[in-house]
Length: 111
Image (cartoon, rainbow, N blue to C red):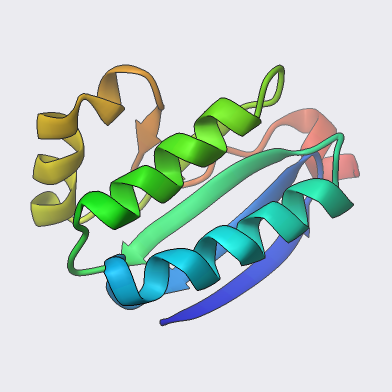
């Protein structure tokens, strides 16, 4: 698994490449927590377009970051159908917005 992040205005965009499962959960959690600590005023967008598989460990990482984001937005983009099915079954799509692509706001375009 590889993780690449960029800052886009008021958001941290994190592209994840690879499976979200038990072996990758801890490194992903640590990387995301470090970013959230460094950029305390920014929301988080997880780009899952290169994620083919997610298990309960990966779901736990996403839910844990959701709980940690109090007052800051968290969203998921580029979710493949098989991963979306798992997210829906777990009820994550009911609490975390899922979009096909990132939306630019006027504020972000000038930041």
